Length: 210
Image (tube, rainbow, N blue to C red):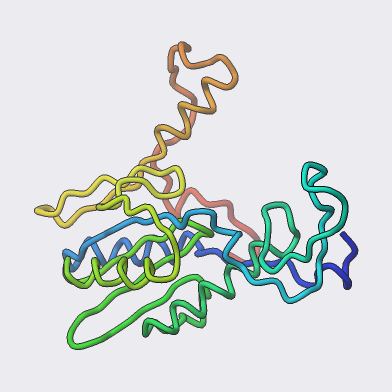
């Protein structure tokens, strides 16, 4: 593909982890619902602005096809899907957070919803189950989705929640285990390391000006 001809910009924003933690914290503190959905065939929803042609499969003869929507592998596929999703959010009444373009919020008739988007992974925090279901239904009018129900996993992290204790934890045990298995270290015995487990400000390095 030729830059400036087949594509221009390729950057597509995803939710920052500090934004995700902030939304999860609000859900934990206020007892909100947390729901997780996936967008199926994500990049195929993005509408292309450039004229891009692909060679027709030989089984159908000779010739070329002009692509109307993005395909996986196109440089701009992620960006075009983001623009399409942004338009969908606006259509159903959401407002984009200007400090993080993958965080959206909606207030309507006493209902509050916040969502974080990481390509096809969308986490929804709402102040009621009915509102959470409405958000899922609104998005499902545009895309084919997988509704995973209550959020238990997010970007490889396990979400553990204790509603009665107003606590929520992100656990990366599976991610760590996968790394160990990849290097054949899953059966290794853990050992202690000579490291202080609790650091204090008094232990920080000092300079002449501090």
